Length: 413
Ligand code: HEM
Image (cartoon, rainbow, N blue to C red):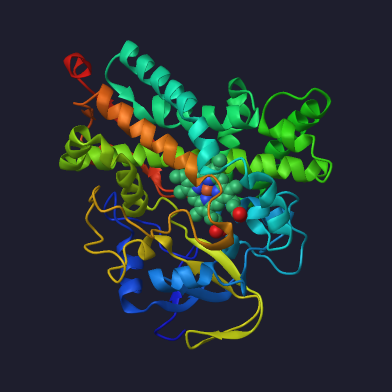
């Protein structure tokens, strides 16, 4: 191994020294070089690690790097950004409907079916409904009283209810998707457990889509089920992708974002006084917290030279979004949470053709969730010492697993 190589499990280091900063090891690699050789575990395969903002954007917008990495057995890890970890050899077919792991033209054909649904305008129409979900949850919190776990009672249910309603998945059946989604995103759950979880989820959505084909309801899954250009497995794959991508991610951001604001009380107070800052605050929280801590993985499609490095077809490239979002060449004072900065150009929703389809929905959910939480419980605080808040680093998305909070009843008036 040459000095410029690094050998790390899961493509990039995961252990963190502090709650909000990327692991010191990945920051050190970033300061040392924008791009370097990487050896993946456990297959020993050679690839590349890209850490700068400039090169992260370049890789994600270059069609010589593709998203098609593995076949059905690898699909759950493909969702979690662990493709390079899977011991994949050969050319397996991609899971039907899972366009996150496809390239144009297949990717374009399927994504195009949904772009109209997720526009800014269409998402704005949903605002009153999101406000309702948020208010119901906050009412329930107030009724139960302090202390409470904000993850279980607020951060998880709000995005889960919303994506269920949009898709037409009964929220009462969340037992059929919440723990399987979590297993898919868990890094050490083992291939068998992931495959089993993946299979159950696929079956659950297929079953629902079949029912909606014979008896349509007013929702996205019914629309997809009625589309003559899509076959049954594509519909199930697309529905599953939306369900899986659409709740745990935003939930992690609402939970971790609240913790970051509580721990940076001046920023919480600023938002309390100037609610018009909320849109920029959400972008800054996305940048500062960068919950996708395993990075985004691409595969080199053809031999070519990139930034002076000789790339070989089939090699994987891990794009470290966390270091890109803390890159001093792009953001001034990147390690400071500053809700007034706007964080233009952060890469938390990715970049290029695969840029997050649900980003407008996620933004609105976060904006409404933080605004109403601050309004309703202005003196919200942690109910345990900050270092006792349990954090989860063994999933492709980083976040708090519980957030015990308290407040005074007077604070609510
Ligand atoms: C893609 C992050 C919320 C649906 C992505 C990608 C990232 C991301 C980084 C790009 C992956 C790649 O390039 O390989 C996030 C974060 C979220 C969030 C941080 C919350 C804060 C959502 C929501 C939905 C959603 C709410 C659904 C309603 C999708 C889909 C893709 C995607 C379908 C695949 C797009 C494609 O391949 O063309 N997301 N996401 N995401 N996201 Fe999100």
